Image (cartoon, rainbow, N blue to C red; front, side, top):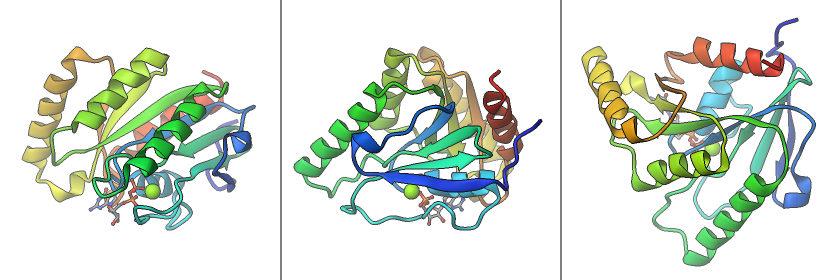
Length: 197
Ligand SMILES: Nc1nc2c(ncn2[C@@H]2O[C@H](COP(=O)(O)OP(=O)(O)O)[C@@H](O)[C@H]2O)c(=O)[nH]1
Ligand SMILES: [Mg+2]
């Protein structure tokens, strides 16, 4: 038993709803562009560059399914919040995301990434409200903790607890793809979801 993190493949980079996957429990990663979604997935899987990082805005938004040990999908969703993309691009993004969330699959947990250095954006809070509406349990994972002092990490976590007091995240966790802070907790959660708990 257990979850073999070595056994990983990019199952598909979906650009169309008919490419969405089902049949395995999934954990989805959502957040602003550049918040660190792909870096987090690489960190969790102990890979340097399985998930491509720092994608440029305007590039085709893809929904990437990483299959772990034939037991679990990690789903890297396209980021939101790029000021410089056109309204048409934003509409396209929104339709694609809507299609993903409407698609019937086993969405066990959402990881809603925020930047620990800043207050969550309007879009981050909308994401939380949306996840509650559609009934997907979620963790708020605040990344780039390595860019802050220990004191600032504690302070900003407290700030997040206060801001999310009106929301229902299962957990608020500090994370760093650089130092691997918070990784163990997420990996344990992945394993328990993969085992059907
Ligand atoms: N210092 C630091 N940089 C990070 C961390 N996570 C991501 N980054 C950097 O932030 C940028 C965007 O990361 P990426 O994973 O591509 O974000 P994505 O657009 O959400 O997938 C890259 O330059 C990463 O190296 C982190 O935990 N610590
Ligand atoms: Mg990315």
